[in-house]
Amino acid sequence: MPFHITCLDDPAKPGLRQKTRAEHLRYMIAHKDHILFGGPMRVEPDGPVVGSAFALDYETRAEVDAFLAGEPYYLAGLFESVVVRAIAVMVPERAPGFLEQELERELGK
Image 1 (cartoon, rainbow, N blue to C red):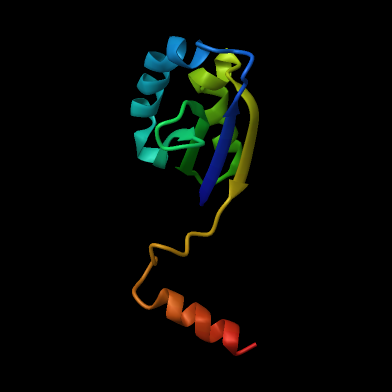
Image 2 (cartoon, rainbow, N blue to C red; image 1 turned 180 degrees about the vertical axis):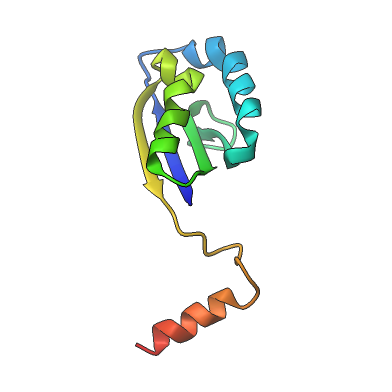
């Protein structure tokens, strides 16, 4: 089951992201089989980093929590807030015609 995680950096901790970035990258490499996508978030394309977003593929929320518990940015206290949500993947389609089937089902209510 995919989970989406949004983490906002604590603005009172400038420099902490850069200081722990190498550890973070090592952790991402070690867990890449469970990472669907992820990366830094910015308000503007060329603006400063304000947080991180990940989509993780784990069976349970407990596994996601364990991932976060070992994540170097999280351990360092970089994040002001962390939101975890389970997501249903609609796009890209899991199988050809999936979205059309969903539309037909929706219209058939």
